[in-house]
Image 1 (spheres, helix red, strand yellow):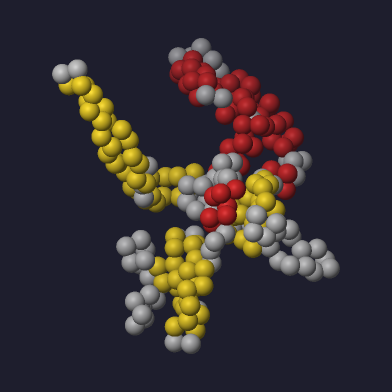
Image 2: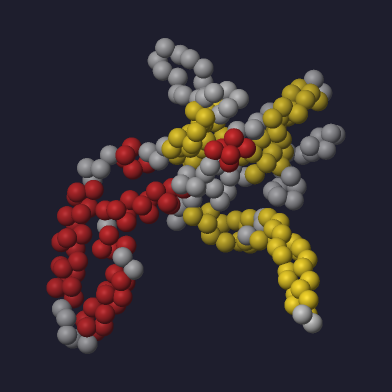
Length: 228
């Protein structure tokens, strides 16, 4: 599942959240605000956007198999086979014939109709262009602007979704935040320095070299004198 890109194993940082504490003592209520970190996960498997699409496809076209009762029913039939009450050939025949028909039927489903999860989120007020969230060959991303036609035109701007973000629940505000990157940080040694967020998290690009934060991921190259 990991090799096919359905799940990723990683740790995710939590976010600070404030909450109210009310204490009743001697007919008096005292209130205070405290903070906690919520959503932190360490070395766990997380589904990807591709997994969500495959799951939706299976639920739509194979409802009998993805039903929660399917495993329980199969286990019961296995027990009957073990007790000699059911022939395994009959059990397999009863399962495989309708299953094979469904497989043949789904072979005619266009791949583009399954993977096309494009969703319009709204309009970027600064540029007046439409903002979309889509699934591409290398994962889910947001886009501002339209795809250029054969006659040319201005190319749209793209930004990859961050870990934990899904096509179904990305908002316009989320997309606009993602589209703030890449960001020009200025010049160093007569070369441009750019900050961006990629597949493995935030990074800085300088002189065709990528530098990650040392606490998040080992850098691909040695640090420069600027401490990048």
